[in-house]
Length: 409
Image (cartoon, rainbow, N blue to C red; front, top):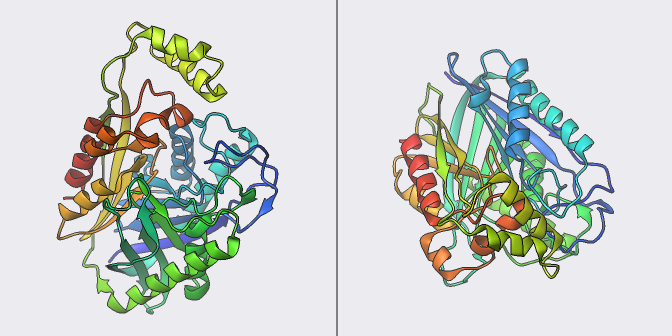
């Protein structure tokens, strides 16, 4: 029989910290809309142990992920660093904590403390494991999200739920999976917030009296709708209504036939298309009409990838936690929704949960069609949140997709 444990920690930063997600913000945070949380879920079959950490944050960079993994594993007997998945909801109302981000001041003391709190939450969840039975269900819901690039293109309406009960039938924990950028609150918002995703998880916790984590699906081109700007009541209503739809799923739960925990991962090569001449980066670095973060990006690229033309590849980790028919897929960035659809379609016997911004914060993985159409995600965003020499190309996206499917089979 599986053993499962869970724990929750308040990770709300101090007021005055700078928020992430919108470069238009000109001031630090001024208050708190709702608290932010780190939640941890530990699964073990007595031989293999794994952990999933969900966090009300825009994203965590790889150096911080490795620190958290190391600190957590040191506290948890039988839990290896590589068997820990750390995901973020991608709220744009949370603090600037990814060290990749440009143009946003970061509180490194808070980031250090944050890493410790996330690791400690995993440790507490590990201490609480008990015999448990998992259950899952999925459905589709309307009126909560849309394709932000083109309303006529594909939008992922899937809502999935995973829960665990102890031998007495009491709920130990739950995980909800939905796909939409938590950007209902825009750059006009100066209150720390988990956006709709934070409201969703907290409302489910209130009603179920157990830790509930939210993992965001392939939301690279999907937004929650409508935009609320600074209408906090609208955000709260949105999250509560989505929680109500999640609770309905509990009437359709199916027992998960699993007595083993498996963890698989693959390092995927990240490529960026053809090399560009060094002169192009020199021009961008010297162009005073460009934002400061673009000029900084160009200088960093030349330092990171010396040579002319500028060339080089990177690496990213895809990770899957499996328990019988359940597969929790971790992807290190935000992927276009069509990729999530195709991963799920390729695994018809599985109940798939996809976590974006898992184990890294690498930016957008766009489809071939998305690259052909262009736009912010595939033409510009990488200059804001990476030192990559260019945008990740479509070939990388499909290597990520193939790895996710292969690791889940």
